[in-house]
Length: 116
Image 1 (cartoon, rainbow, N blue to C red):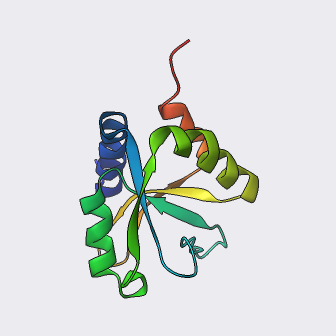
Image 2 (spheres, one colour):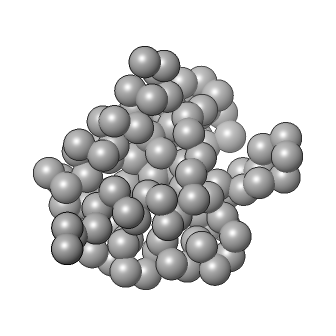
């Protein structure tokens, strides 16, 4: 299993347990950097310590605040908004380059859908 896959598995496991996700923001708002293909992703973490590590390790994110988002708000408002805006979800990015999987909001929402 790759490191990004392990971080994604942790995200899927932790979010229901925590009941919230975390992102980061500064005075300009929430980051949504683009990749080499022009796709943009907004990062979210399953634990505040994960977000704090990236803020401390990535020069571009120094000075950002870690922000808690209740999972119900994230599922009901944030993910549909990201979908509408054509943004991906950055899942538990890590390391000095803040890397990880960037996935469609609908796929991520499906992980937490109530079984029918």
